[in-house]
Length: 335
Image 1 (cartoon, rainbow, N blue to C red):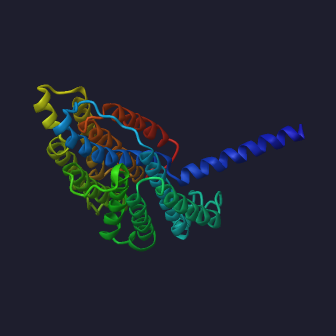
Image 2: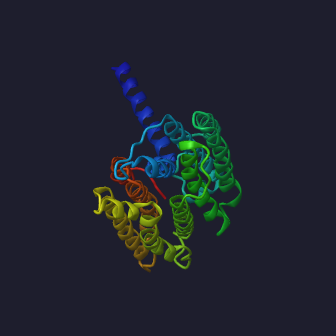
Image 3: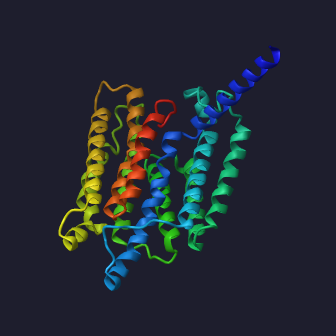
């Protein structure tokens, strides 16, 4: 029996440690990263196809999606995002000891030294993985790593620079995927410009709302959160070429219906949480839950974007991550 008890205790310890790491990595938010890379990648792929369409009559409603470059870019982006999450908690260890003592590092479940070592390891892994994609992808990965580090250690406390820095981190995840498709695309595709504008506005606003989740007098970013879905619906169909597809084929393909459905759900979630932020009776717990839901709902726009571009199966795959992320938020912190 002593041996069996020791095995049970060891299993509990392993499970507890795994849970602590998943909590440190904010698993629900981690699931929002692949869509950034996929959207950027497919914008570049769609640009390639659109040029070929003029010569070969390519069917605009049937997109293909396959590349080892995409896989390496996704691995690189996830690793760099994990670097950011771990480094963020490591840099906040003293503050969390006062305000959030239950977090993995201040609670002693994960040592500060281990967290710092893991952060360096994931940063290195992300940069190494970027070598597997076209050459400019590595250069973008370096910029992304610098942006992540600067947010955690320089700009996070600034009410304007911090949110903007965070938004740039998410935008460069998209750009990394964009260069992974071909490496020579100039940053001027209309779809990329619309996604860039959407990501900058949305993540700046959400980060501002998150910074003020404990202070009802602060409302920076909350009206922008409400406006972004309308801006997306007004610009994305044209910039992605979806309206051109409708004109050429003479009907609305199912992919575009899917895109509009995901966009409208995104709008509904934004409106719901805008109300939460502006409710005088909303608790800190509700505000934090609202921030988490807003971060996770970017999956809907990722899915909508890929569907507008003509890749419905990729869009549906991304869409499946949304309920998984929402379910994971019941167990692990998002905000």
